[in-house]
Image 1 (spheres, rainbow, N blue to C red):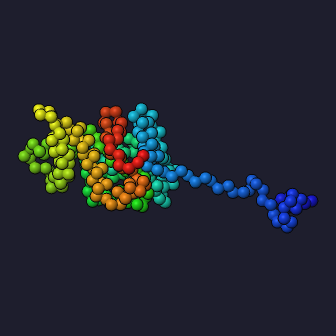
Image 2: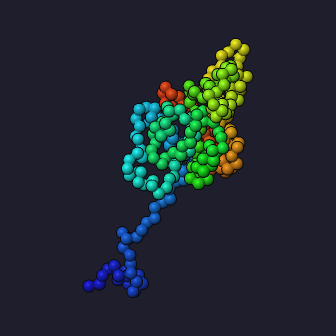
Image 3: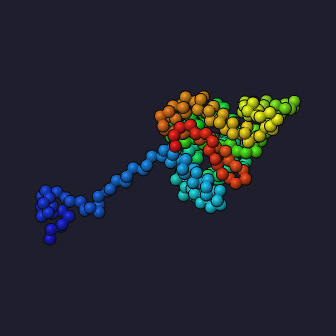
Length: 239
């Protein structure tokens, strides 16, 4: 009996050739949609909304995910935020292992090591989004405000250097005050978030070039401690 899989002449094929069953043909998977700045921000917003509403999914936090990432990482975004213990990035955005490349220090002040770390995230890891995250009731901001009215020196030279990087935002907020008005720490915090974003983009030629090419967007946002919501206040690039 003729094997129908090899007898192509009876169906108009070329004698002596082998017809491969359709089921055996490998169909290539369609290419995945590129992770654009807008898509990355939508994922971040969706995770934060789950956290705010008390319905977190806690994704990517199991042993399978851990094993999968042992060979490398492809984070959705980089996050540069304050080191405050209440700003746990993966919890706030309801993500897990390998999802965020996180850089943090007190008051989210932009220094050389911060820029180098975020340049690595952009140039090597290819993140399309950097989120600069401040928050209300920031101790570093409060210390910077107090430093202008107190004669007491900071606890150390290093702490003094950090506070000095926030002081310009305090001065800007003070200048904008109406006569007799009291300085609002939230206004200082908002100005400092803006200053951090502008310093990051202004000082890094690599990051500013990625923004200009449309490969990267930098979002400055504030985290509300009471309700957990992240609200953007400055966006450099396109979403």
